[in-house]
Image (tube, rainbow, N blue to C red; front, side):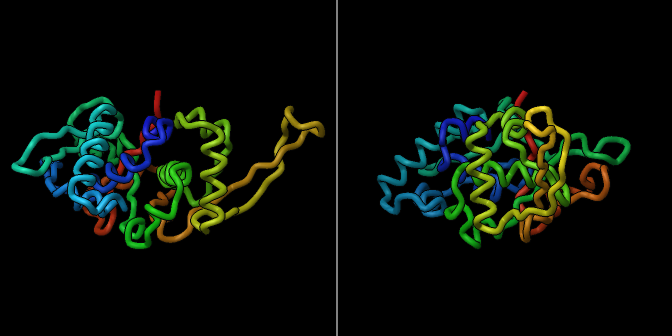
Length: 231
């Protein structure tokens, strides 16, 4: 995701999320007309323009090793790859022997599309939303520098994204606390904790345990996405 955000490839991200939404069978591939994809991401309705636009977006996703593409008649057959950009085949998150997941994932509810959030939110807001959801906590902090370094996006992106989510009522301030800080003249700083509002608060985990391995594919009305932090 960091590469798509840094290169401002918002439509490519929107298209990738739709691929995640419709590739639920074991081969993790799908085929649709270019005009269908284009309409879904609020793109061109003209057949020729839609074909050019979607082909360009597929190439962008291929360059990031997030999908593979082959021809199926007049339609492109698209198969999703692992979210980490390694180009490895996609696999569902699996449970370890102790019953905990080795990979953290979060589920994006279909309300993201049904309520038009994919068009209403800016690219920075989408990035920060997915980061917040991947934390799976009742409340969390989103400091600009830490979030930037940890997830590979700019501090400005974090600031703008967080502000947009607050303005839209997707996140809200849960509480604030005073902390010791050598960076402040008086030796004290302020730490703000946020919470996600419904429907984006459905990934909260209990305690410190990893998400339940009861099958990430079993969540009806949700899209499963691994939480990826760049090295």
